[in-house]
Length: 605
Image (cartoon, rainbow, N blue to C red):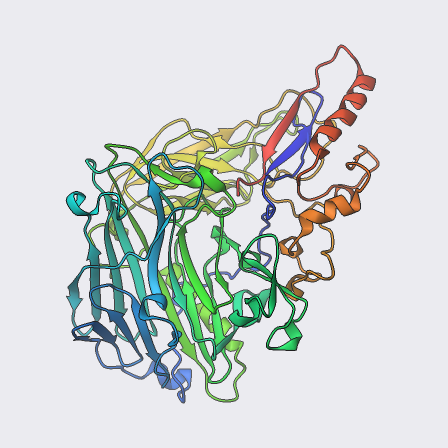
């Protein structure tokens, strides 16, 4: 997508468009504030109040190794993992034998996976791999912690062309007195191994259909969900793509006439901290918590899947969704690579009978805050996961130099400031191989980025309301324990002259533009009169219905972009038609003048 401006010699026009159907990426309207570090995380156990629970002491963590399974048990929950494949086959909690879908095969309950392809392949459809381990190693085993490693080592003499050329190390960690467990993985590609591509990688959990019916991904994005059988051919009607289904004969009539589409529940990385499911009877919550974005691809605005009908919960680490081939991880010959994904936390909570089940969501948000505060975690045993004392920090102040706005430099209020692998201006939006670290500047433009992994980075920034991208022109090297102050850095937005007029706001969102109502026969009730109503299915088709005889014409000074400018550029001649009308306007302003036009990216997703 992009934004377009128009000026006498430029800051120019603001127009939102995308080459994909599900295109405009808006900010979530609700965010949880992180309280002080004295917060103590709650752990819910049936029949006990929090006051009683905080004084309880659970037994130490125990590990039971069997022929085909291993079990981690801390007295609050038991996690069963296949041996040596490393699939989570069972989670026992709150007197329930298994929270995962027992009707599924053991390999289809809780698992890591990736989609890969050979070098030179195009597109985003590759080879699906559940990454079954071939060896188990106990890394840590004591009363405070158990950490297990399930590995699959690539052998070029056997696996060439059959398996992704990676050494894969999947880790599972259980801590004492913790109402959940952690998982992370290390992927490694050796220099002498063949080139290849990665399209997606994630961890997925398939929960019990007979228990988990209520899904929550934000304060204003939660609801009871349809059943997976409602999507089958005898109950649902396939729409433009397989993920979208119109529910015509659902098991529960209340869902009749709604569209179910997992992409409607996507979320920007910066807001994707906690999501999951609630069971009403018994009152149990299953939550996926991600404390850091550092291992995710595409920066803070990249959208990824969360939870969806299944019931399914995902932790997405790398994805080409909404971006296409630009975000495919492409490794060339003689290219070594290693990356740690995670840890993510699978958090379980429960309530006593009679309590409001939605309290489980509030509790999960508090647990998320605790996890964020304790990042980077101190417990991972892999030397590839850097602890806090091995990391560094960068601080400074971002100023904006725009003489058409102010004679003095103005603070970069609310700027997004981040570190990513060295590259070109704005390259962080497509960067996938390394780590990224982002923060928001305060109202005076001051920023501080902490807990940065060692390595070389460029400093990138952009400011809501200001066109363009900033890049610090010096590579920053992070060493263990370093504290780097870059001082005042000045961003001069691209300009050729004063602004004559502007359509929209250069904030990488299209929230200010006109979003039509959906076809009443193709709605998701959650998004009726909702700030995220742009997520409704089929809105791209509404453009042709609104303008059946030609493309829209926007008249500067008369039209209101909140009512008259369509939020997305869909398949049509709208862009060409708009330029034609602008030429007519410019001709009236003077045939001997130069009137530049500048395009401002909203989001590459």
